[in-house]
Image (cartoon, rainbow, N blue to C red; front, side, top):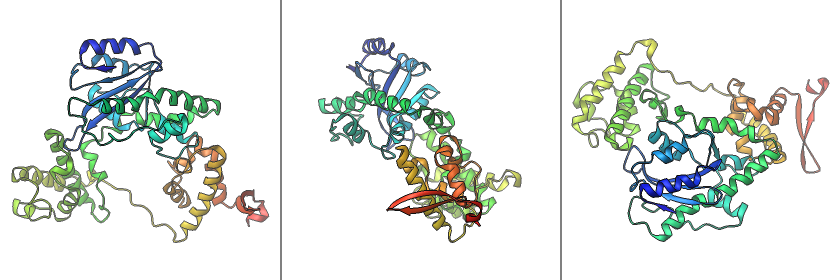
Length: 386
């Protein structure tokens, strides 16, 4: 079904309203804009698939009402960008959601498994990916483009039911809740302009005052990119922002001398940048931003992390989950360094599977050894641990 007018949208919504879930995907363009330009919406249930053309159907309220229905599960694959688009359209994030990429990692698939690989593995269907890099804003769409777009949701209902069934049988559905809760949290998609500086890299050498300047200048860039609807990098690059914070220019000559400013930033924007620099310099000490510095770790921490990683791989294999989902190397490094507060390994289902054992391993209450080529976990007695 290809929806190109209001009547078609009403018919489409009438056919999906009774379904307890809707498979959902989008095609969009974002290479020349700040906000994603929505070009297609694909939806599917057990017995229908449809493409909705938002370039032709401007009034999407009937669909958005269904997406806002908390009794209808929205099924996506790697759906964070799709949810961000609907958050921009609706002012809220569609919920509840079920992301098949996240769920698949609890069913034995690798982390970040692609949709095509999942369809082929679970359903034996090999998808044509020839239109992956197509320009979805151009009309008319070819039959191949329409088929490609429909395939992105055609198999999601079957995959959803299969994955959900597996995880229900293994009592793992609740394990997904923290990840899905983060996906539908508006804060995931609405980072304040004043917080954007935290995404800028190579700032460790900046003083607190320089960080204050960086915060204000980065906030100016964020607001300017939103106002003009252009990518942030088109305004000014991250490296130039850091250099502005480091050198603290006070006039147009000093600002224009900074690499990446004079040849990119229009002179009409200089007053805004200089005002942001002044704002950063004027911040009271108590309002200066703070970036958590990683503590210097022992030089031999990698040996402990390697040992911990072996235990993680063992438990991941036993439970049929992807090891990186169970514990990232950063999680292991933090735990080995004694950083336990807020560590994902000590929260929710990860703690019971491997988190407590990792603590015991670090504290000498557990040991790992090889027995006939297999890794064995052994509890240590009091005398053994001395």
